[in-house]
Length: 322
Image 1: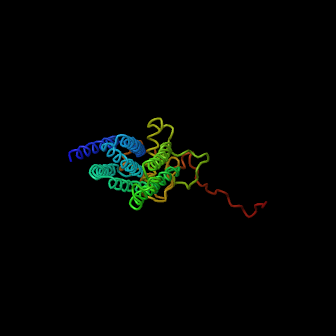
Image 2 (image 1 turned 135 degrees about the vertical axis):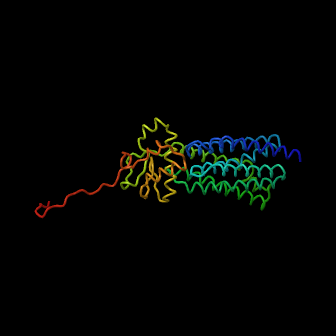
Image 3 (image 1 turned 90 degrees about the vertical axis):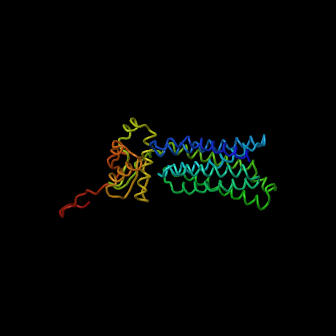
């Protein structure tokens, strides 16, 4: 009993330390910054779980198993926090939910013998993986493929985890079928593939949307973009500018679900779009007055083309036809 409590205390301390890397910075501006931070910690947790499992395989230590299970559950849970932040939601409640999930995992692994604890852990992993897939499906960023990769990777691993439990109970945890497709080796390979795919997608999100070679076209008055890009980038930095664009696009979708992302802003069908979006960004994301002042009509920039108005004059009755 004392050993289990000690292991539980260590696991809680590790999970709290992982979350500490991001929680103190929740007040910093920029959803993109928080997204990248939580995604990075998620990747560290995923790699750390593999290291703990290798240690458990070599030395058969219960502490390594508990820490590995906690880190493995934290990896998709923290990725879910990252996606929720990118979607404009607050990080704190999702981060605390991740801590609770890690605590449950630690208790089960430390007190319940194998393979029952393995089944519970795998089922717990399917919860944040499924939630990540759903969250990625709702996020609309340009380009679209990084979120699709995150969606597919999490959905595939959730299905794989569920199948792992089904095969374990149906055919046996020591059966040849389970060893062939769901034992430590295949599970590690599947997890590594998901980690690599998600990592590539996160890096692409970090790079931001590519500037199209040809200007986009939208009706006048409907494009709201971050203007004075060169001067603002020099003053605030590229990372802050990308975060401002992401926050602008997320805020626009709260007013209009059909809002279309532009390279440096958004196209939205809403009267007084600049004023209303500026007020919301100031209230929700804490934009400063000089940042709100950067919002301009896309027609005033060279990045967006508007539909031209027909200005041809009517021909008089005596005009010659050609």
